[in-house]
Amino acid sequence: RCGSVAVVGRPNVGKSTLVNALVGAKVSIVSNRPQTTRHRLLGIATVPGGQMLLVDTPGLHRQEGRFKASAMSRVMNRTARGAVEDVDAAVLVVEAGRWDEEDSHAFKVLSDAGIPVVLVVNKVDRLKDKSTLLPFLAEVSKDRQFAAVHPVSALKRKGLEALVADVLALL
Ligand code: GDP
Ligand code: MG
Image (cartoon, rainbow, N blue to C red; front, side, top):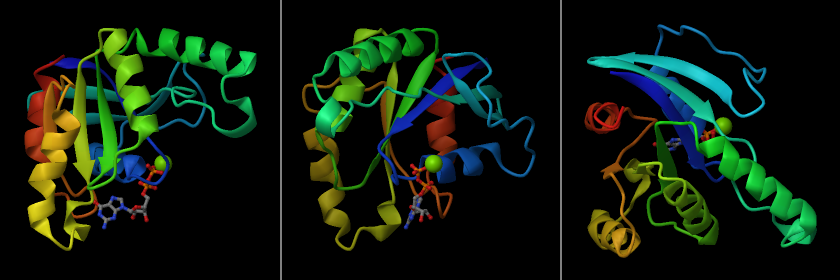
């Protein structure tokens, strides 16, 4: 299986760490230039069962501050919607225990575009009280149709095999 996967999430949730963990040492192509005006290729992950082209989607997230709800913001959001339409799947990365409006917005844009969204709940190694994880997963999954939900630690490379298997299945 082979396809393109958008890696989406707020700053600092661990997207780059996840991409590096998936792409691993056998880096095929990494470019800091846009391949198209729509995506930037972050890397190619060669995994058991296939390959994933990991891309980001600049501008997907809602503009904050003074651009909020401005004409500029609407144009950027429209552009972002166009940008997500040609990926096969998306992983939405959040930090364990933290979900905010921006995550809801990103999920909505992706699901409205018909893109299957796999939720990656990262940094589970940092959870002091592990019993908070299940209620968090239940809360964010309520009223949202994720293709799969995976608690992981990108840093410690935990949970990534199961994540990869579920993402590949969407391609
Ligand atoms: P990005 O902005 O979404 O690309 O996030 P980065 O990949 O740059 O990570 C932001 C910070 O979170 C860095 O200090 C990472 O080392 C840290 N980080 C990423 N993944 C994990 C994780 O699974 N566990 C812990 N404890 N820290 C992580
Ligand atoms: Mg990053």
